[in-house]
Length: 209
Image 1 (spheres, rainbow, N blue to C red):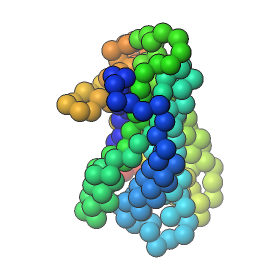
Image 2: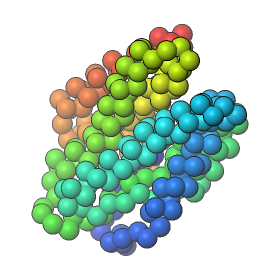
Image 3: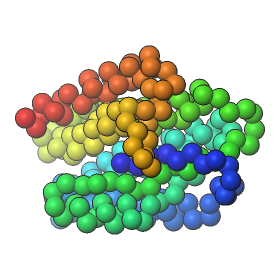
């Protein structure tokens, strides 16, 4: 899963002119990777559902990090990670996936003063987006006719899992999950968000056991 990268301010460009290209390529590559993983590559309905799952689960997650950062006065843009995209495509052939399509690069603040609450808001924006989509598609999964509910389930499950996973308070060399950033800034906010993510992922877990 992708993670946001906070630049020190040195060497972080004010604009990244290849951002749209990176977004499009990441979206296409991740859709193919997940279609291979889910076995939906040859089904039009399944392929569309997979595209929506990637669009909401990954791209919307990263763009909400970007939007939150920009609203708080930071330079922010999405940058694809080519090795991560190739890794996602390669691993999808083996019935699992290592999904590291890219990250929201966050540079210096160009207006106002940085604060610890800024990191909390920016980090929470991504998983919160996943949880909102999980709620919407969980409801659709429960009410849609049998010919369509499996597609809603695919989008729900992707967002529920990513919302939960990203809120795990884990930090590794070179990668810090959103949950760790939220946890270190406000444990009460993290506990509430994590509890909601657990509640949303339970229907998915029950459906696969």
